[in-house]
Image (cartoon, rainbow, N blue to C red; front, side, top):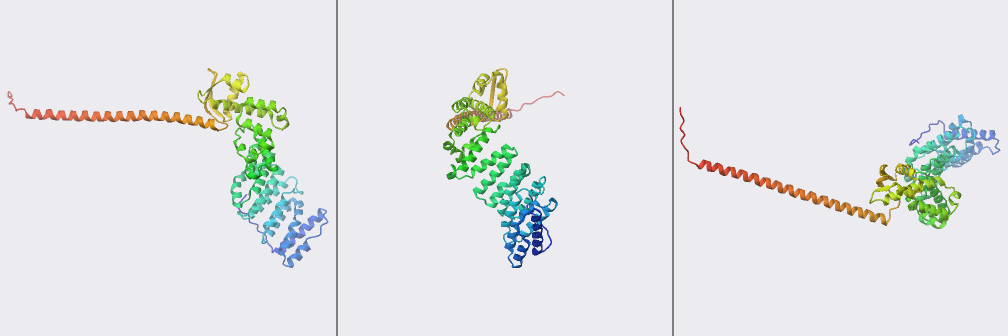
Length: 433
């Protein structure tokens, strides 16, 4: 979507509105509608100087343009946009035009969505960049994209969304409505990650005092299921930090219990949950295979994090905790590394997984104590290094000072011998010629 769009159409307001109203009357007649002709009504309002009344009648009847022949549709809508732009408050009319364009283009089932998007982009761009009327145009664009399942058309523009919403100063309810619409479009396009992220954005706009509302519960449950079913989503802190998700503790206690299992527990706890709530996973629409795999990977991440002292996990321990055959251990280790939960390497000779880095699933008191212990250990190590460096520095200085003293003593000694030599009496030396 370009920053601005300029429409260049010749003719006075009176001429153009008369021409378009006559065209709409003709379309309505061809479509078998018995509505009263608007050309005369619009003309009378214009003659009486009632410009807004004329525009209201024209725009109210403009839905007939959705049935205009494909080759004429764009020109007709552009003319309508040009006419309403001359109103004192064009936004009230542009909103109705956006509403019309979000409905099917009956004259062009194949290309209708593309035509509608092009015209809605024109509407979006003729509105000043700081005008919140652009929000309604964008909502209509999202609706058309959803009907055409063409999320890739919208996705590049979403990088501007935060700036747009800030500029338009939209309230939380309007932001939430838009985020949900985008999430729905992404979901229909099977873009699971984008759908989830915009759903989370929507939940963040819900005030704390509305966290238990029916709407909040509906979207929170949807987000929770999406996170659990997402094959590569392993960090659930983004969910547990939301008030509306915490409210599920009372309204949906079983779902919340399952979330807690995936947030901080291991495979044994998950199996206990399934035994306690037999048939819940299948009945909830959750993917049992995805959940089983994720729980094993999360379990491996947890036991890797707990092995911070030895920094090594025997294959036998991994096999036991993941409840898999010993021959499958290496496959699960490779998977957990690919998931980014743990870094390390396999020692096939020693049947051990050597851990370089592990990720804590929950960072609580125990983890803070471990961090404190590690910092103390590093501090003591650094103090030891500092002591060694200080001692070496002092030894170096002492050695240099000793060298300087020895050099000075040597120079002084040579000078003394030279004086003694000069004080000896000269002897005559005879030389045979």
